Image 1: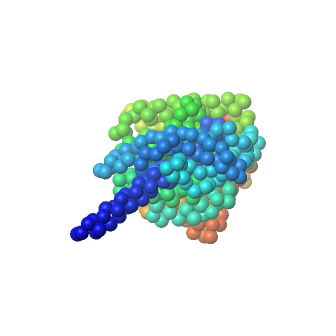
Image 2 (image 1 turned 90 degrees about the vertical axis):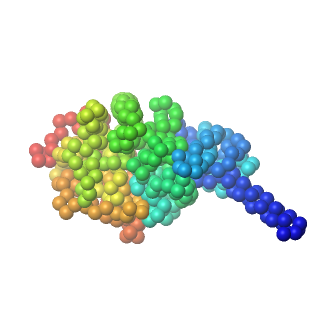
Image 3 (image 1 turned 180 degrees about the horizontal axis):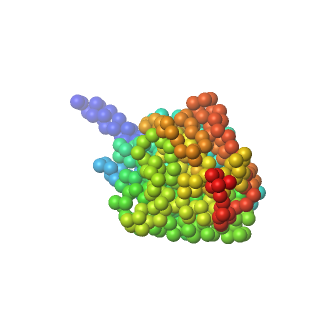
Length: 446
C-alpha cells in the first residue's frame, strides 16, 4: 500500500468515525409525558454519546422559546454494558389548550420538529384516551392506527398498560431502542404514560426505570413504577403488578406501593377532590380476573393481585379499590380484549338487569392486551365465567372518552376489522366516592 492509498484509507476512517459520532449524538426516541402540573410537558430522548446541555426549543407556530434540562447516563445490564444517555427537559408555564411546535437536542444535533397540544383548563372537559398493552417491535399491529390518530390530535393521552418491545433489554437493549424509535411517531405528539409489565423485569426493570419520565404527584419526582396524574374529570393511577411476582428484587417496594396507593386514593376521595374529579381509573399489567386458556395467575380464585401473598402478609388490591370507589380498572398481559360485568369477589354487581353499567355497584374491569406482539393472540376458555361480558380475539386497542362527571364512553377498536369499533359501551355513574359500592347486592340477589 503506497502513501496515497494509506492517506485515503486514513481519511475514510476519519470520515466514517466522524459520521458515527454525529449519529450517536443525534437525538432520537423522542417522547413526551405530563409533568406535575397541567401547564408542564416533559420531553425525553436518547443519544449514544454525551452532548452539551439538553435543550428544547418550542413555541406557538415558531421556535421562539427555550427550556433546558439534564442528562442521566444509563448503563444497560447486558454483556456489552452499553452507554445510553437519557435527556429530560421539563417545559413549564405552557398555556392551556394550546398547540406548540418543538424540537429537542442541542448544538450537537437536533431532532425533527414535532407538535403537541396542552391540557384544557379545569375539570369540565372531555379527555380522550387510547389504552393498550403488550405492544412489541414484531407484529406491532396497532402502530399504524395509533400513529395516524396521534398525529391528527385525536387523543389527550396514551396509556400503555405494560409489556413493550419484547423485550427492551434484548440484544443489549437494542430492541428497546428500536421500539422507542417506532413509538416516536406516536409518543412525540401525544403524552405517553406507561405502566410496567413482566417483560420489563430484566436487571431489576432497569430499561423501564431509566427510559421513561412518569412524575409522582405526591413527591413531585419521577417514579415510573407507581404514580398518578389528573386529566379533566379523571384521576389516573398507574401501579406495578410485578412487585407481586418478581420477589427476588425484594418485597419492600410492594408494601411501599400499597401504602402509597392508600394515601393516593384517600387524597383523591376527599370531598373537594372527588367533586372535581369523580372518575378514578387504574392501570396495572396483570389482571385480577381472566378467561384465558392458560395457567396465568388471573385464572386462580386467589390471584396475587386480587388477594395478596399470605406467606409474607402482602395485601391484595381488590378490597382497597372496592372500598375507595375505583370506577374502572385497566389491565393487559392476556393478549386479547375482555370486558367484565361490574365485579367484586367473583360476584356481579350490575346497576340493574337492563342497564348493568348505569350506577354499577362494583368496579368495571377491562383487559386490553391485544395491541400486537411476537407472542400473538391468546385463546379464551370454552366455558367463561358468568362475570365475563365480552370477549374479543382481535388485534386492537381501547378508546375512552370521559364526556363529563357522569358519563364515560368506551370503545374497542379492531385493527383486524378496518379500525372499526367491535365493543361499545357507556358507563353512567351519578354517585362516586369512598364507600359508594357499600351495600350493593350481587346480581343473584337483586
